Length: 105
Image 1: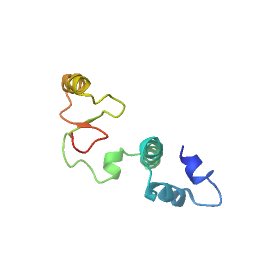
Image 2: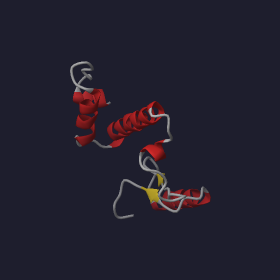
Image 3: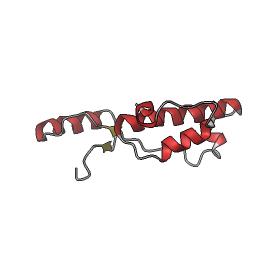
Image 4: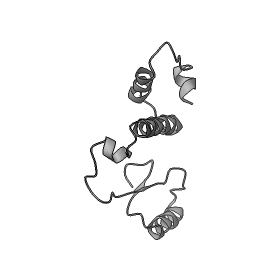
């Protein structure tokens, strides 16, 4: 996905950090952004493992014990009847928020 839009990575010619910065500053959405996010998370994980410390310590330590979470509801139907079922499902799973492709829901 990312390779299709940016061309094949030229490892050895462009430092990986510069290639990642190019990918992260480009305007992508959907599956492209998910692929970039996956790479970004993997890079942070590798850096923490190389430093032999948990990632939260590498980033400065805990600032709070818990974080609120939401569920990504892209791909679900947002027809009124379906939306009611989706919201009920989200609530049963314990989420207090959901991400949708619409700003006005």
